[in-house]
Length: 163
Picture 1 (cartoon, rainbow, N blue to C red):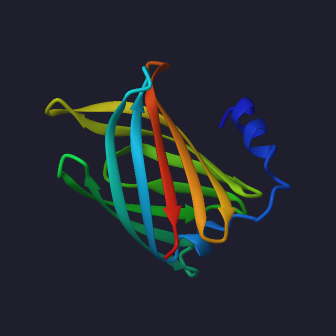
Picture 2 (cartoon, one colour):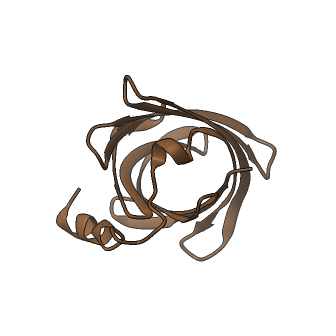
Picture 3 (cartoon, helix red, strand yellow):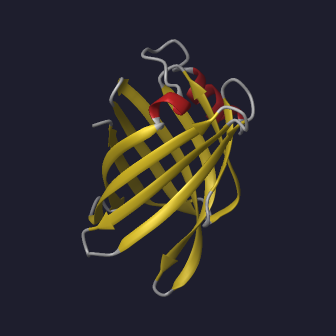
């Protein structure tokens, strides 16, 4: 993580409620989201059922996501997040290139990763700068900026809620 990103997440270190990824993502959640392109046009909407499990022995948070997009396409993704320090994580899933790296501070989680997205019948590598903000014990608001070659492609907005 470069200095600018680290300073950006540090600004949330005293904001409450404190986000604990292991607690929040353990169990069942629901999520709603959309992808907005660089011109402000909503290109996709989706819902997601999520199930998470924290293994304290291996310090691994497993998150299973089942997406349904507005065009009827279904997608399943399984994330493995390993807690590497008190507030640091490394994550992987099938389409992540390398390792996702993330940090919590106060009510926020920031992570950065490269991801292969299926576009027009082939996989295209894009980069994500992803921020999650715990609003209360049940709701997280997520904003992920997507880019390629440093050029912004759009933003994913995602709202998580514990039932």
